[in-house]
Length: 298
Image 1 (cartoon, rainbow, N blue to C red):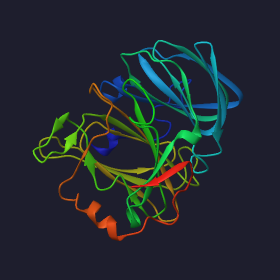
Image 2: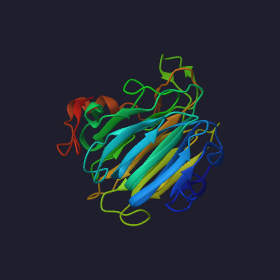
Image 3: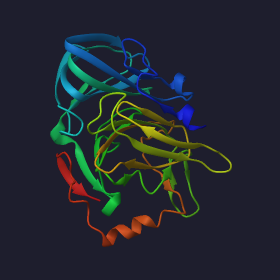
Image 4: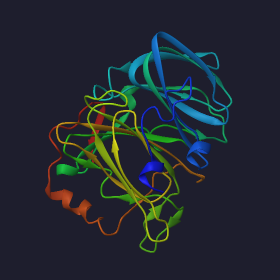
């Protein structure tokens, strides 16, 4: 896979009513999906979830979400750089209505179990400061495996201060296996959705995303990304995600795979894994956290 196939600029996958739609069929895999919905003032959309479980994540704005007779009110946020947000969970085989104004991400995964619609409070989102020095970043683990229950879906947000690298050292999760050295890996399809501080969908400043493979499974991607762009990661090492100096970078990671248990297990590129050990002698970037909830350093 080359950059032209993996990098989806804003607007290139629009299909009304969605401003962005990536289904498993469109991506050429089995589980992970993403939609972005833009609603005008007092806007409304009713849709069926089908075989997918979904989240409603405000990127900018607020809404009420109606499903299975429940009303879930999302306070939302002004932008992804302003606050940690609350969110809603929608089960498969449901009809849902979103009413509000703003831009909303709907990460999704093909699901086998039907769970109940639920509200995720912003105050309960675990916020992790990961890395150190110029590899410092913030991870909002709102739908990580140990933070929020789903059937297959995993989703987190990452905020990288301008000039820093995240998704680093490069890592992969393309097979369910335990390596000879004891490292555990999980097979996951992954979607990166980007926003760059100061940018509007399809316009403005840029960041960069690298994805590369091995001789056995080649993939070669170096994408210049703007607000609203997507990069698909079917396999291979991904990282770094590079924030240009002066411009904070946000990305939403959507992950799903065939494993019986939800996991984000990965292995580093063995050429670069040593970098983690260097963080012990460095401080976390003092600009973090960019947004707050319950915060811990890792």
